[in-house]
Length: 500
Image 1 (cartoon, rainbow, N blue to C red):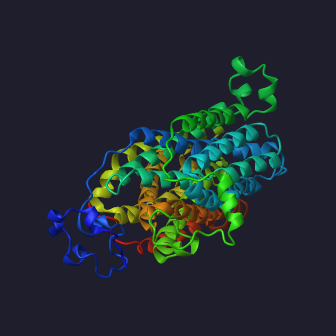
Image 2: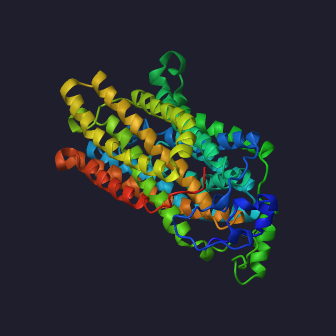
Image 3: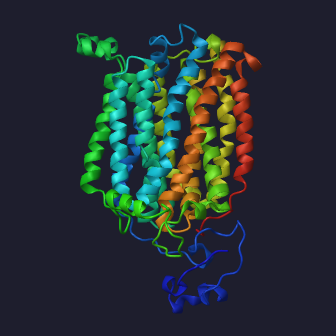
């Protein structure tokens, strides 16, 4: 059942003809899962309120710090794994260790993200974001100083444990906007993510091994010869530190009455249960058991998780495919070239999301855009073996780069699914005070799926290279099959979130 509290406060009596008779009396008829999730969709369009763009811009900088630190290592991670000697020269094992390095970040993130998000409902969003930015900066400086595989794993673990910003940022966006402006702001948030994922690989490719790439400038630096990836990692680490300062100075708290961590701990010690008492009070966060509904778990969380499984698997094998020799199933590119290509992916994706997502969402509806984006995963995976076949026949030249450009176009459609699912997740929260916990649950599942995606896709890639199953295309066959299942599951979402 959909409940509307105090309908008379939402719309004046003079406008009451816009509402069904039952709604004017404080009641609404039973609904199914195709019923709009937001009350405003039931009968009227909420007027667009002014978006606090100053706060949105701060959130954009915070949001871009995450992908900047995560993707900066992509161009040189295969090279790093080879150089530390953990594979003992076995090229087929590079994918295993690259996948493990990335999945360690997601797995540790899964252990803490829900706790950070729930804690933000009580102590406020700002303290949790500051802790996350500190973790990003610390992990990147640590990675840059790592000379062993164990050190790199430890650095990735710091990133995962301390960074709970992903869910908290989405909660702030939902709190400072309304349903009519939410898709527009989410489009900007994806641009911020794409900017970070664009600059990250570009920085990683251009600034790794600076003593070798720029001998006239850094050739005499013994420090950079000993730590060839420090300069590349120091850039996102310093950026996160600067964003920390900006957040501390200018970001406003959105939780109405945050409590201090000390008072929260004292309250928990006095209480036999840490759960918040069940209440219909819209200002109180709901306990977890009241969030475990079909709308939250099945429609929002699982669709978000399966989307991440498909998209992260693609992202994981992309640098491996680019760096693997042509005769082993890849394109045989070096880190600078990989960084430039991944940067082009991010730039074009940012332009597409900025210019097209909000319009497409308004024109076709959130569900249609989501399903259309999921369908783009099919040609994305098909193009991998096609590009290798073209490279074998014609070399890595204009024809291959044309195929890469086509893959970028389909990638833009796949990436648009994130803006759609964020809208569904925000609508699925039972009240605004539970946005942090709802986003935290979603991020928990997504972190688990990303861990599985990183480890499984890169391992399948290595297995395909080593054993040649399906002509080396086993990984693409499996991921293509998973994509079809994910598309089918996406059809369970309701047709509308709110009326245009």
